[in-house]
Image (tube, rainbow, N blue to C red; front, side, top):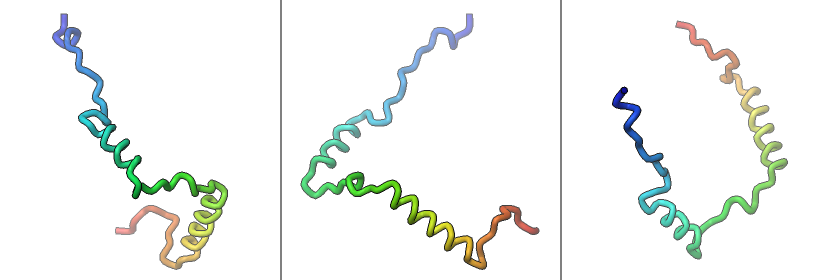
Length: 69
């Protein structure tokens, strides 16, 4: 039998070590900002489409990712 069949490691918790509680505390502060309430998906898509159009008009824009050496 292999040694690795007997080892069991706990799944890491990225919000462990008190981070989950810190985030909850900061979100409940009076000065906390909530950016999710003002999101309009259609408007955001339209604005980014305009940005991408402007980028493609830029003479320095490139479509080919290859670099001449």
